[in-house]
Length: 87
Image: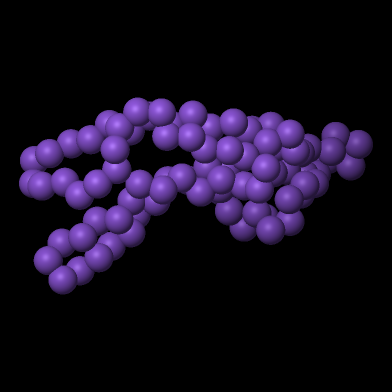
């Protein structure tokens, strides 16, 4: 598993060891993530402007998305026979 964080954030694996699993096995990994000083609070990428009765887009690159992407997504590699899939 890989945590992808924005610039300025730090990630530390506190518990567990990443590795390959056999069928029926599970794993628990504990990470400590420190948010960077410039991180944006969780909120919509738009805001309502009541003076003109419309919504203003604060992050234009998120305009067509239903929600802003997660700031710290996790990537998991899932190999199966000759196929390698990432989630």
